[in-house]
Length: 324
Image 1 (cartoon, rainbow, N blue to C red):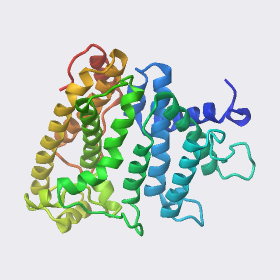
Image 2: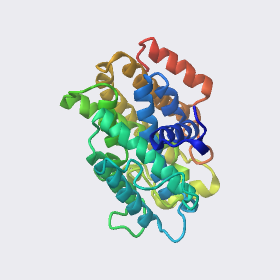
Image 3: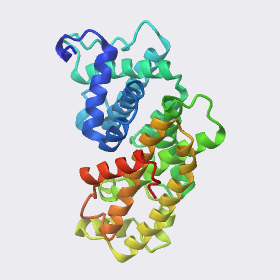
């Protein structure tokens, strides 16, 4: 295979760069994708790579080149995405990765957008799902009309997770070989995406609070005597109070129910796709187990599932064993 520096195919280069991003930042997705046939595997990388680039714009101000603000950069990404999806002769939105005066961020974006377009066309992925995703990303950016950094109820949080997670599940349906998904399969795919997202929220309470975001419903926290001041005291002291531990235990039960409700949709997937998604679900679900093993201490550590444990879970998924 040609090296990046001399590669003239933006689609091939995009898949390669998306693969690197997935391997570095999305270890669970990458491990599960390896159980898929190569075309679907590359599609997972393309979708993850695009989401990763946007997520970095939202979460890492240093990733946004001056003079672009985060909101303006998302607008720019959305414009480039629409050019790619609706202008067949411009596979990389004109962001030529070979040009010496193109910033590295543009090079990555241009090539990954080429891979995204190839994936969308190859698997007939609904393009409106990308609009929903970008709307949720704007909800994380101060100064946008969509901006929110607190959510009072599960219903309010669902407005965010629909675009940030549920639509990712919907994008995966055709990619996994389900050409005529019924409503139950679509609902299960969306629910599984939201389950992954809530697991992240439960694991990353402290990290999100450092960014002045609270993704756990404040009404649910308040029912256990936890308000924002309480969360900030816990974070400052690097302790997880008994009140917060009980609130997290309750939300873990809610999260586990999401995985349970999504399981029937996993079982009807084609064989290799079923194994891959079951492995991803098992690895994400196991994060909840690790939180419990740490006695719900999320303010002083970020729990992880070890590589060895992920391998065991993947092997169990391949054998057809239900992961929970």
